[in-house]
Length: 304
Image (cartoon, rainbow, N blue to C red; front, side, top):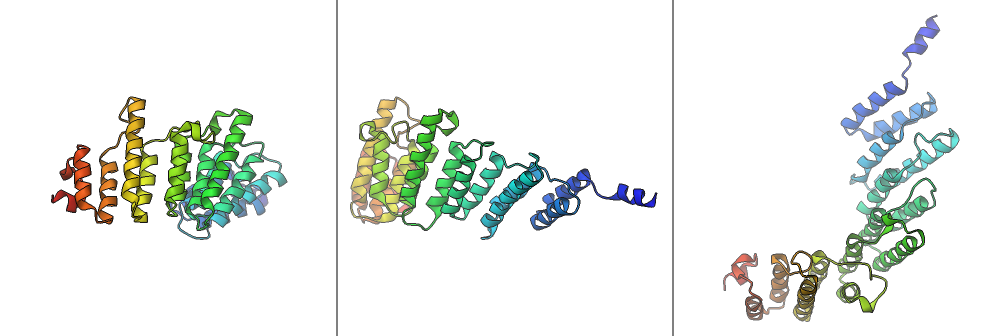
């Protein structure tokens, strides 16, 4: 009878769940991981998917350099438990994979993020989407790999091919993933390449790769900021061309929301001119565009 009474006092799944929630609220992720190991190894209680996903979501925003590896280890643990215990209670879902890839993106782990993405694509229980491809490309973009822009473009082609083969609307390319490619080039000072990619999307006859993409104002700003950072002597002239392209597309589009230059656009242009010491030319150009110089933050222009 005493033994039966003691057994009734042993923690069950509900007890562990409450304990995990208490640790979650206090951000004690290391303790949560240890408790889930105890649940499986000592009590044969399977943690739920949501418990793993909560740990992964916390690790995804961690600044620890160990976070990506810990996330991947947890992903493997979920698969192992599901396989060994023949249960789907903790089988990884799209939230699981998304958290691991996001963590890799935060730390610039391009190859690791792509490995997880490929693992998900091969998982018959989960379907990839454009958001996870974008996160994987962000991992490449943030890495120090000099060929990261090319890796991003390769991933874009692979996603587009999957979309064409499967017809899954969740893989439809969008402007967010396009801007990630632009950003990968821009962050490496590859202004010419970034402008070329942008042109392929705005001049549809130049490329079939980005034919379905409709760039937005942010797309142009990414390239303009890259020119600003490059301090290239021809930067102002390139900015003029990009500005004219924005105005052309805005006119064709018939709205001011998508492409028309705004205050941010002209602020970037002002800085590009100023970095080349072309202050008077900048003032003349901006006034010709109808820009009120006092609205810009560039103090040296506002003094005119």
